[in-house]
Length: 336
Ligand code: ATP
Ligand code: LTN
Image 1 (spheres, protein in one colour):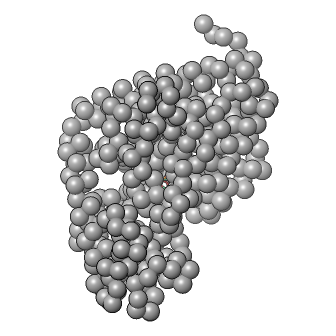
Image 2 (spheres, rainbow, N blue to C red):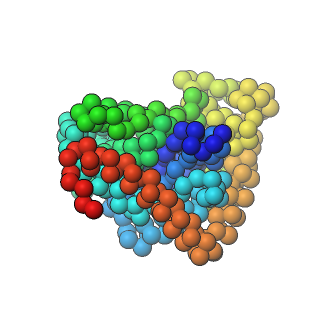
């Protein structure tokens, strides 16, 4: 298919800490797979990351690491636009305009805002509340038709659609109204290993709840061995009654490509201990080549620099086009 006939797709991940296998399964893993079918645009969302307090040097490091991880996970900068959000000014510029059609009531109702306000009670800032408007700007600037994300981002996508429709109604057709691309299976919401009723989150204070993309084999296996399960004995997919075991089956499926029934058959009659080690080994074996490639890329700063520069230029061009249209529609006088 010619590039001009392909639909556009946008997604981003925040460089706000170690990336977990939840982020990988629910989002990043799918990014590479979509590259041939869509015009893909992927960003490292550093503007979003500062809505919670970040150490400057750590944020810089995490941004570079996430760039390298994206490429190590198969995003090809020759096929997709890959850039750092703060390198492209249109994201903040469109956010300002969209702020004028977004209501405090709808923003303060967002689950993530409520959760993060509770978790960071000492720093409930305007950026935290405005987070979804910046996310809407990310998506709408590229006229993205699809947005691959985990299930936790569904509410933000709904808001993005609402803002696009509201703007289009007020000012005339300007934005593509995007759809979420959320996995149909349980991979859209990988649960904590320490508490399978909670989503796996990199900001969990219990490090046994999550496995990061950088964990070494021993750590990965140790975390899986400790994973909370039930007192039953069979390895069966039943998220309602057996959330822990079902979560492990989901992870095993994602990292081995084996279907859930295949995995159930493989472990029929076997104990939880054996199963947990097998899941840990499968995850560690799949992570090893990604870790090696990421390390290789991080050692080549010149290459990463070129990728970021080229990505920012491409993103700049696409986003300017939309922003100019928006500025015209709202009545800003052309500046040049
Ligand atoms: P935090 O966990 O600290 O709240 P986050 O991991 O949700 O942060 P991002 O790093 O921006 O925030 O998430 C990147 C992508 O990973 C998003 O598409 C998000 O929906 C997805 N994601 C996050 N956690 C999970 C999970 N447990 N299962 C599946 N997908 C997830
Ligand atoms: N809020 C997202 C990260 C993000 C994003 C985006 C995802 C920022 N901008 C645009 C999709 C499209 C999160 O996962 N926490």
